[in-house]
Image 1 (cartoon, rainbow, N blue to C red):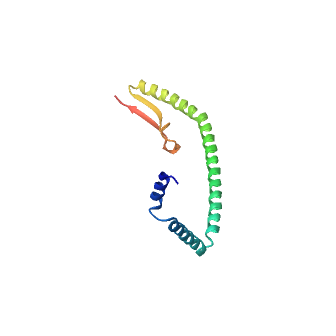
Image 2 (image 1 turned 180 degrees about the horizontal axis):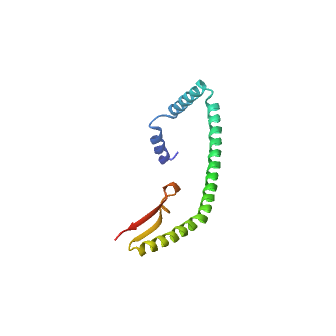
Image 3 (image 1 turned 45 degrees about the horizontal axis):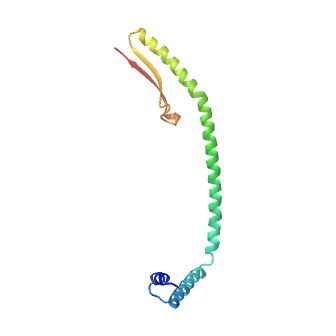
Length: 132
């Protein structure tokens, strides 16, 4: 080895000889073998859990695909009825507003929560009236 390699070896070996390092390696191997020998079912448990995790991943992927499909279906159906609902409420509001104008007041009907909440149960119809 050249001088640079020798210096690097000294740093990595922390001043221990090759024999001492080989002895340390053998000790660590023996310790690892002893841990495995005390519990021979470790590999079986690992493989079983790995199979279970793979099955769960498969179920999760299927559920995610199904959720995406259902979300697309909901968006598709919503894009058909929501504009019609908005048009209906706008026509009602125009009539309501015209009726209140005749008696010298102001009125409006609108959908609240649309575009803000994805849950339809949080939507509502607001009827606004202003008396002068």
